[in-house]
Picture 1 (cartoon, one colour):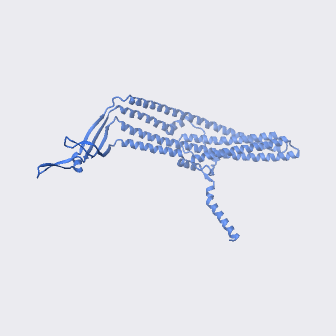
Picture 2: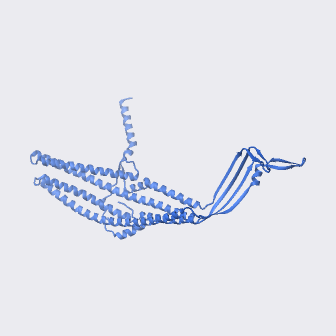
Picture 3: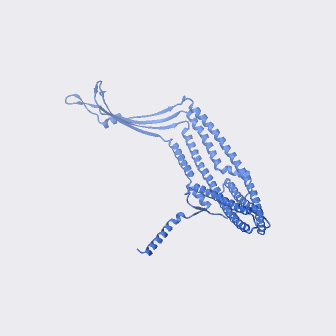
Length: 459
């Protein structure tokens, strides 16, 4: 094989590998809606909650099935050894015999103090509790995904700002180095410029670490491969001019009380505890059951007595199994009443325990409502404060930007020393970071209010 052919084969193999594995290492672009959809489809906490729903559905179905009759059948057969009485006679013999019997019993509960009906109601409410828990998990995860997504956008802007600060610091270092060599600046000025570069580099490292961490958290919500590279789609934040920052806290609280999954879940748990009291009290009442059964038996020791007409003497012949089963076939039907008289006060204790659990559930519901009201009022106040901080941060950034431009011009012509110039750079960098964080803080806190109002969170 010539070197030319070997080269062609090697290039073809390299191209094939590139085509096959390129999609694996490609950086996927994720939108907010994609992140939410994948979280709802893949998150293990949601799947676990759905399993609990199915368990609750099985419990409800079984509570309904408890209204049906119970039917059981049994049979047994075996050999007896030793002395036994001869059937139909008053004599005993030592022999081996085979005996078999079978029966079937059916029983249906007619009255049980309403326990079965109340248990069905309780299990139906418990299933609603499980569904409410699933809704709560989904809503919480959606909010967490949106929060993380916004944090990623914030961290991306901080990384970009840190890179710009490094460029600015490097430019300053270059000018300081030239001026130092020309004798126009001291070694202290040059050292200050180098320190500025080191600080900017540290800020970039910190911002990049925060960005990587927020991306990892988003992958965990989506149950994605933590090593798979992803990129979030950046919405045009500048077009988000319709961000509402003024809300009536009382109206938000009133709306949230009717739709918030936490309140819905607490109220359902309260209903479950209330129904448990009725179930516990049903054990005070008697249980009335209707029953019926069938049965028969067989033994090989049983003989049939017949008269020998010719000799006029009794003759015993084997008693066939089918004949015995038919002759021994018996039926029974009746009514069973079981009255609880004394059971060591277990029923009373269970009722008391159920009543206390109901009181506790009532308190939990009120606590949930109070916490929600407090959280919403705080969120409204935080949004108003964030909006004011953003306006102030924007004004500060613009002022420091203008100050830096003026200081730079004066620094270039030697009218300002390096200390004043570095101070202007530091103020500009800090105000830029503060403005970026304040901008996303307003957006995030506004989305929090949308969440409590039951609106779809979008960017």
